[in-house]
Length: 192
Ligand code: 5GP
Image 1 (cartoon, rainbow, N blue to C red):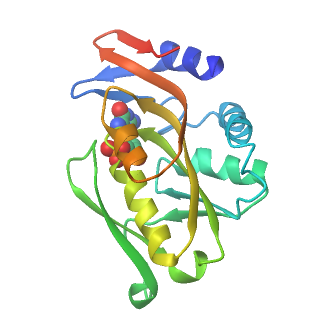
Image 2 (image 1 turned 120 degrees about the vertical axis):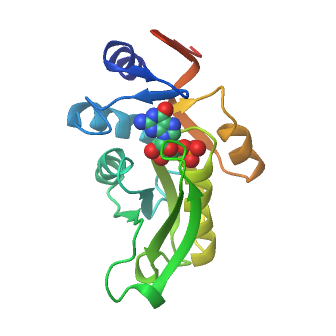
């Protein structure tokens, strides 16, 4: 997706540890027009199943912006897995663990059972794919609910990491809008 690649080249900052910072349009300040374009591109990439999607599922915080716009474009609700269960949520949630690539800690993700059921057909959306932990945890939550995962729409994939192969092994179809093949100080290279 050229618009997204141009924005990454113009505003992305490469940090140590193969981390790309995109705080000016995705992870802190959000560019709603770009997120809308991202959502429309997800609809095109998942055109064969987009009519079947009943829910978009993501993880707080950084997945919420692209997920909400995708829900708007597909006209379905958006559920974001929370890192902490709210008051009185303890017995009524599905829980899964994800090791955070950027924070190097284990995150517990949870979704209240009433918002994800066996009737749901889910499109997972997230901001980044690195080693696949976040998407696998979201799939785990869907599996616990008996919901079917139709695919994962990723805004930025770091294709030199193992996320895509891990998700392929788990049977998750991935559509990534910007595939980065190399990150180095002042270097961001894309697959196409
Ligand atoms: P994974 O779970 O696939 O290893 O990592 C994906 C998650 O970690 C995403 O939800 C994202 O929040 C975070 N993440 C991984 N790599 C990066 C990165 O290079 N930049 C930013 N901003 N977040 C990342």
